Amino acid sequence: MPPIYRKSKLLRRSRVIWGSFNLWRPRLVFWTGALAIGVISVGFAKLADLAQRTFAGVTQSGEWMWLLPLALTPLGFVLSAYLAATLFPNSQGSGIPQAIAARHLHHDEDRTKLLSLRLAFGKIVLTILGLLSGASIGREGPTVQVGASFMLAVARFGGMAQAKGLILAGSAAGIAAAFNTPLAGIVFAIEEMSRTYESRANGLVLTAVILSGLAALGLSGSYNYFGTADAAPTMLRDWIVMLICGIGGGALGATFSGLALYAGIRIRRWAQPQPLKRMLILAGLCGLFVAAVGVFSGGQTFGTGYEQARGAVEGHALPPLFFVEKLLASFLSMISGIPGGIFAPSLAVGAGFGSTVGTLIGGSVALAAILGMAGYFAGVVQAPMTAFVIILEMTGDHQAVIPIMAVSMIGYVTSRLLSREPLYHGLSRVFIAAAIRARRAMDKEAGGEHAAS
Image 1 (cartoon, rainbow, N blue to C red):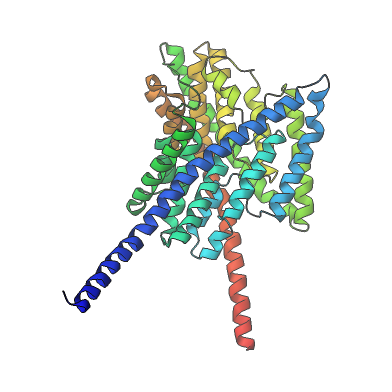
Image 2 (image 1 turned 90 degrees about the horizontal axis):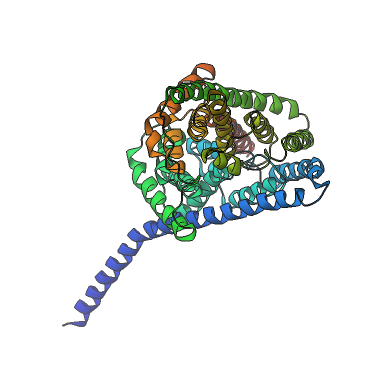
């Protein structure tokens, strides 16, 4: 065989191998990123649970220690708000609005201001700080911003260009790993994050959810978030509870989201002259009131509310006014400007509302708590399919499929009648508007420099 022929054959073979590597590299990077999201979500969950247990242990360790939150919580809120404003801007709040806003932006630099590895790190640290301070927040919304940030950063490294689809995939993977609810992650991405079905992104979302879910399963095992429930409507009063939980839960959810959007507008106007100073004052005051509500409730409203919601799902009735106290603590935590989500606190509020309704009507407390979660959560996020699927996966209550579905729809319709704008999308407009203003200012400055030269 002539040397020239052998050389050309080796060259062609190396090109094929190198071409195959270039073809597979983005896929391998994407798969690695999805697995990493699952690992990070599990680690985040364990740290968040540890922070919550630490706060409870410290504040219940002595005769007068139950008063410690009156000092600890405001200080924690102020520190968290300060770090969020100075070191990690755009990490405030849930994180889901930032991910939604990033999907509407066209420039990579603008997306980076909302989704980056730096912000992901800050989001995790400050959410844990909030839970260490007794804030009524959750880790699930922040996990969405973390997942979307990580996926976007990994995609840049791998040379993938589908930014919108990757944000969707990272968000879905975050929800799936945070709750161990793969179906809910997919439905959340379609219904809440994009509000449309995008056939080009469905493969990315499905792959990310599968891989992040496998990583989470490998570390935490298979489990239902609230255990396994088998409550089912057996009497007329259970169907009455269903109707009340749908209408009442939806109305409560609409009240929460409507007040949150209104308060956000008023707070931004009030803080405009001295944003940092005034936001720190607001954070301190919100922290003080959250502490007062927590002390008044005997510590029931601090943290995510997971233990209280799980107890209700297992049939243990909560105090009649728990849902009011938890709603107030969650609202104050949300408007304070500290990083933290509303997923878990919303489920606790819904479980408390359902527990109270079930106790008053005389029906099953477990069923009422599950229906209350569905009605209230659908009312807050105005995403009935997500509410139905996520609660079904978290409780494993397949005997109440139709009631959960019906309550989610009733809660959604009731909420839409009272509050026309979904909470997360309303909040995302703030970040979109800020990005547009910054982009126009940059273009104007660049135009001025060009004219001067």
